[in-house]
Image (cartoon, rainbow, N blue to C red; front, side, top):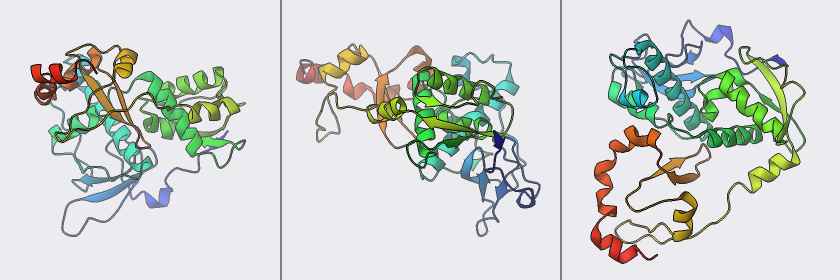
Length: 288
């Protein structure tokens, strides 16, 4: 293991700290006459920030409902603030990895911060493991060559809440024979070290077979599409149940059955789902 080369050089820091992860980072000059700067953080990626001084703290005065749904006590404002910062780190890092421009991180608009944080708060564990496998592939120059992974810097990229969770998924991939590394067993999650990780043939095979066609459906002029029987059976979907559409860091869109943990998130969308659950829709598409 070696100290990571992906950190920010001390001469470039200018005494600026990332407001999301509290790590030293680089900021640009303000954009024109706006109080907006572009932040480059080795952990959170690149994102626009306002106010530009970055000294305004995450303005949580109450624990967001979606965090209460995840088990955060209503009185634990410190933990809630920490988690919102972590989920925002996931959002900005995912946008960076996908070469997609993130929304402005405006530290004075709490509703926007909560909305962006919530987009990364419910990633299922299997998807996090797959994200790690894809990240290792992205860091690999060619089959057989090792990728330089850094858990302290890379955990937001796979939607892990900390390096310890990322290490858990890395060890799981190694136990399944999908990756190899001599350093995994002695790797510490609290050090900013690079670790050489190599995808095995089984790992490459998993990536190549991760997606396979299951069914097709056609979009109507009203923007509606029927979920085919094979998909409904696979997801164990019943009439009236909701589904979640999620986007990966590579731009792939996944569909899954909404779970109880998604309830808080889905409540915000409930008003948009009624058009899909009418009697006419059931008559027209129920036997498909």
